[in-house]
Image (cartoon, rainbow, N blue to C red; front, side, top):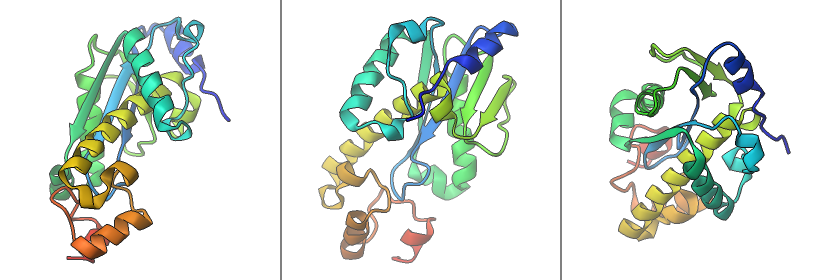
Length: 205
């Protein structure tokens, strides 16, 4: 397992940046529910705190919940923002993804002076200097932390939707295109939180 390091942040600190935020999203590939982004500024002694930061996809739900609480307790600053399925349907996934990342970055306090953003291929319209890093959640502590905050926040939202729409089992698949999800869609059609612009959902309408 690749363990994220604090090397990127240290190099930026050596260049004079003091408030470096990792930014990541969750829910981009889902068929239902929102897209969620988190930005987090970690303390410079994060490695001494022994928090097991990893790409959120490599952790089970209980590990993510525990590490979420640890990150929130020590973070210099963080923000979690949500954009719903309706915005995605109106504007498209790419614009929604960039917008939620911008929202998370802009609302972090204290204001970051540099952003390390996971996996975006199109630069965002931000006055804050930033870098787009492929697989950043596997390489960089700040992005790994953001991936955990975003994933846990979105999973909690989907658990709430599971209570509202129990026949879709959103607590189990979180809106992604699993066999269980497809089965519910074939039987019931789309729910009010499905992304109707997505091809798999369009084919059912």
